[in-house]
Image (cartoon, rainbow over the protein chains, first blue to last red):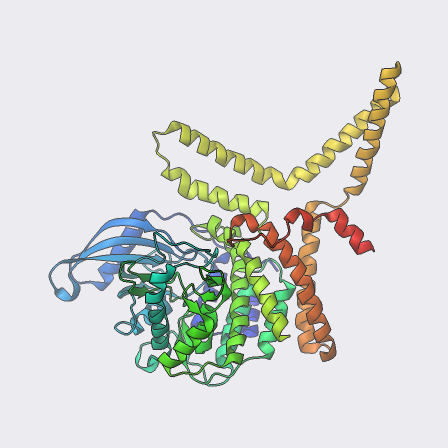
Length: 396
Length: 187
């Protein structure tokens, strides 16, 4: 089986083996259908501006102007360009709005749906700080690849100055002052996301799971399919983890919106006031089990020890037990330790799949705008499998 | 460990061609020239690295052959005899190295990947079709073996700086001493 030239028959067998949400199936199938095609070719800023112009021509009835286009860095997954849009929103007087174009490359370390990201950000306008989201080009009809456009939000993802202490290679050390300001907001916004009335939002790109094991099974199938599609060769530890995960599917007690990547580095904040200004990176979001987010942000990967070298701070903000207690208080929802442990295994396995399998396949095909960065991420895979092995030793 | 030299080179070449070179000041001729040379060197490595083993085998074969011819005809005084004896030893060592080099790096990598995939496939099959009683033993064996492999991988990638402190990990040199590993597995 040549995974770089996938056959129709192989794609059908994957879809049958790993039933996923329809939208997940759609974007994973699109990835495989395009795999034998060309890699990512550089798109100059001018070409992106021309694509945005075509998109906006189809959406706006009034004149507009695109200005000050420039690249943004950060993240290994999507290509981002900032620009200023002079336009007349709702036929109002001319205003200039700083915007961000977020476009996926030919293949990405995380394959996902721009439509889902668009709908989720929209669902939280006025509930949680998120960017204003304006337009989506879900099929890459106007731009070279699928993309969305949202408002540029001021803020930083990590302090620019003056933080001491041990810093984990992956985590962020905010320092004591910012930590005390950010931690309560971190808890509060997660509680708001999980208790949000998703039935009132337009989430047409999402499947609503039934109460039972379907939510966990859908996540397992999603990433088992990615593993099958992208691995150079399977790895016994990851296969063992997948068997355990399938045998131990937890029961969903309440359907919540799950952010999917709720952690340090994925929110912007004002360094002076310590106010969180926007939650970003909603591409892994879905309807499912709140424990998935709880397990994600309490993963050792994103944390570090406090300045005295003592307590482990989750996401560099607070101790895990304090976080879970505060979350229960803020959300009114309970935390089931067994379900939390299940999702710790699932999340660590998922990170291993991304870093060991997709981080190989995407740059090997020359599919991204930053292959050298994606390939570099292969090196972090052992850190995730080390944690996966440790958790599995506790449960097997 | 799938971050091997060919993938590293391929991704570096793309980065240099697509992003770095176009951004270099066209008036900075020294930087332009050196960036082009870096790219050229990477292309040379990418195309020749897979053949390096074959190249070395070919070189050694030819030197052993030439040395044997010289040994067959070389005659002279004491100093010549001493040099011939030294050369004879080197020929024996070279011939021994050739005899041991029956498996290429590509063959080794292919064998690793095949075993990885076959063990994984068997685990999957055992969980659906195997005797439940053997699963615990096999799980423990996989976890124990993975621990050793992960330790080696962590040490290998330590220079990337994913951790602030790697002082508790052994050096990569101590973990992949293949002669020691082979002798331990023999006993």
